[in-house]
Every structure is written in C-alpha cells, then in structure tokens.
Length: 307
Image (cartoon, rainbow, N blue to C red; front, side, top):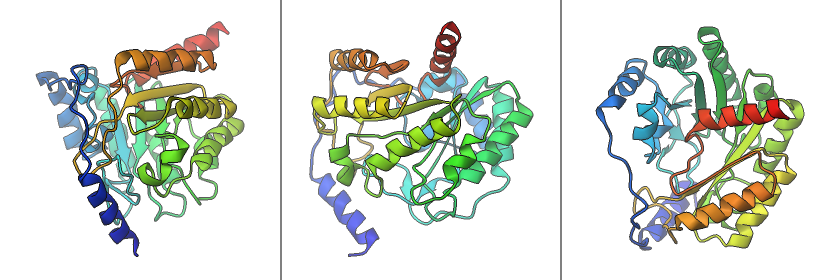
C-alpha cells in the first residue's frame, strides 16, 4: 500500500468517530478590528503564519497584541500528522527571498519577540535548517534587539541540522513531542518519540545558553501516568519549559477528541510539571506552543538572572 493511500484510509477511519460536545470552557474568542494591521502586514509581505494555517484558537488575542508565529518554507508539509490542519503534499521550491520578507514583517510590526516555525521538509537535504538560519540572520540584521524563538520539525535523518541551528542567534529552541509515546503511530506517524527527545538534549549540549521547550496536546486518549512519564522524559533531557493544551479537532477527518479535560485537570498537570523542576510550565485548555511566548521568555530570563 503506498503512502498516499494509507493516509487516505487513516483519515477515513477517523471520520466515523465522533468527538464529545465542546464544554463551556472551550470558547474561541471572536476576531476584532485590531488584528487588521497584522493581517495586512502579513499579506503585504507575502508571508505565512501558523496562526492561520493551523487554525489556532488564540489568533485574535495574539494578533491584538502584535504577536505572530511565522511559518517558513511554504504551507505544504511532507508529513500527514492526524491532528494537524496544514496541507500535506509535495512542497514547492524554497523561496530564498522569504527570510527578508519575514524580517520586514517583524520590523513593521515592531516585534520584541518573534516565533519562527516551519512545515516538515523531508524533501530537503537539511530539512530546511539553513533556511531557518537565513531567516534568523535577516531578522537580527533588521531588528537586533528582537529575541527569537524557533519551533522546529524533527529533522529526522538530516545530518548537521541541529548543529546549524545551535550556531544561530536564537534564544529559545522549541520542538514539540505533541503526545505520549504510545499514541505516536496514529497521531504523529513518521515521527519518533525518542528522536524528538534526543534533538532537544543535543541542542542544549551544543549551546548551553539556549532555553529548550516542548509541548503536548491532551484529550487524545492518553492516560495520566503516560503524561507524567513524558514529563519525566523531558526533564531527563534537560528541557526547561513545557506547554500543555487541549487538543481541538480541526475537521471531522482528523483525529477525534477523546476527552475535553477540565481546567482543574490542567491545573493538576501544572503542579506536576512544577514538581518535576520545569523552569516554566503553561497548562490550560487554550495553551499552545507560542501562546504568550514573549511573556514566558521574560520569565525564563528573570529566573536565570535571579539564579
């Protein structure tokens, strides 16, 4: 069975599974007039944001504050994770002018902190690591005081990609585990739990000054003890910061929501994360990887200074 057929069958299987009704605490904020400046800047510079592509529920709140997460290397991913709404297919050629356009957007929006992410690019020799580097360099040239967080793919089977990023002027390296190890086959096919842990540890060894970060979604059918094991695994790999949010199903063809967890459950996970020694933990229904990224980075910096 070829890959495209297997993906189609997997999505068809998910489509017959209903999710529970959304509870009252899952309410997406309506967009306001304030986001027009951000939207127009993004459109003018012909850049892509994961905020729009991944249908993030926090888009309005972030854009009102002039916060945005730029997605480089196109809008087509070479993977087909069952939770993600980003298109899967054969990506186009790398746009060498994209780093400059992203930097211009950061300058126009006067961002003091920016998050750069990308689709998976298994078609590229370095997985897109050098394009990340070029984007970061352009941002630093245009906005030398802007702090930079990257949210990267796993660069599976790509040599020297992590080494390239470790040499960049970044402040936070984020790579999401997304879910607990037993669910990888159906939720994150093509990825490997232990490989993702390894790159988080490797980049900290290459650049000890970096803060490392990872995030997961819950409500996919994972058990509490599996989440706690994941937390322990992250700490054993020297990860500083964990984000935990509720999974929201993009369409009926995506992986179903098995359970909507209560705010009290998220608070319980927050306490467990703090107990395990994470410098920062963010756990709530609407927590996402780059939600409040600037505020959390400032907290990390202050903790380092105080130490």
